[in-house]
Each structure stands twice: as C-alpha cells, then as structure tokens.
Length: 226
Image (cartoon, rainbow, N blue to C red; front, side, top):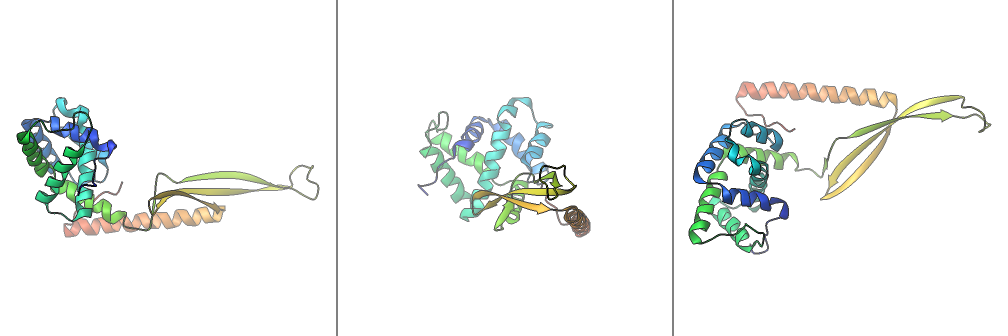
C-alpha cells in the first residue's frame, strides 16, 4: 500500500474533511444518506447545498469529489471498510500537503471514524458502482460530440468558372477514451446518414424510457447516467 499517494486534485477535499467538526460530519452524512444516488456530482452538490448550513459550503465540492473517488478506489482494491480506512490514514501520513496531517494519534483515530461514516453511505456506493459498470468498456465517449456542416462546391471542367453545383456534407467529431488515452474520431456523413442516425438515437431513447418504466414497476432504482 506504500505506493499509494493522494493525488493533488483531491488534497483540498481531504483537508476539508479534516476541518469538519462533529456536527458538520453528522449533518453531511445525513444529507448524503437522504439524497438519491446519482453519477452527476454537480447535481448532488446542488441538492446538498440547498439543504445544508452555510459554514461548510466552501469545501463541499472538493469533499464530494474526493469521497466519490474513494468509493471507486475501494471497489478497485476489493478491501473491506476497516482495511480501506486504514489505507486512507496511511495516505494522509505520507502526504506533504500543507494542512493535510494529523496533529496526534487521537486526531488520526477521529479521522478514521469520520471516514468510516462517509464511506458507509449507500447512495454514494451505488453511484460509484454504477459509474464503474457504465465505463467498463473498451472505449467511452468523452465530452459532447460535435457536427460540422459544410457546403462543398462542384466545379466543371474549368476550375476558374463559378461552381456548377454544391453538396452539403457533415463531419461528426467524437472524443473518446481508449485504454486511458484521449483520442478523436471524425466521421463523414451525408444528409441521409444524419436522418438515419437521428432515427436510431430516438429509438434508443424510447427503449431507455421503456426500461425506466420497467425498473420503476419492479421497484429497482435507476441511476441517472448524466
């Protein structure tokens, strides 16, 4: 476990957790247990902000992002909760970030107790597992696809003369992750391709809505993938 380190992007979240007092911990755990599972951390943060006291809002986004990453890390390591909390404590011990250290052994034990509470929230665990399942694919789209639409002129035998006609072409740009690498794919489409793609996507949406109704009828929780 010694090779594990806290990534810089999560240091503020850990510091925010260390700075929470007992009443703030209880409040945040209660709110997290009360919200519906979602992969969208922005929506989760907004829902909690609407219910929480103002004194913890400054670190809330960092705390939620850090907790979400820890749920994913625990699943990947297949550790039970006490073992994983111990690993997190060791990661803090090894950190050199300012404000990210234990003042004494009592402080360390308090932190472990707090993390045990945070990492026992069922809604976050379900959301983290949903993310893991959703991205368990060779390639996943990253960001929003774009379509560029152009007019391409058709010239006659004399290239200096005005175009004799034109066609409309589309280029679909997709950014995706492939084995940890960010790549781009450009696909040429004509108008018929675009109409066919719209039809396919509309059908996919209709099937998704039917499956949501099925899950609701069976009492199975749907995790929003947005």
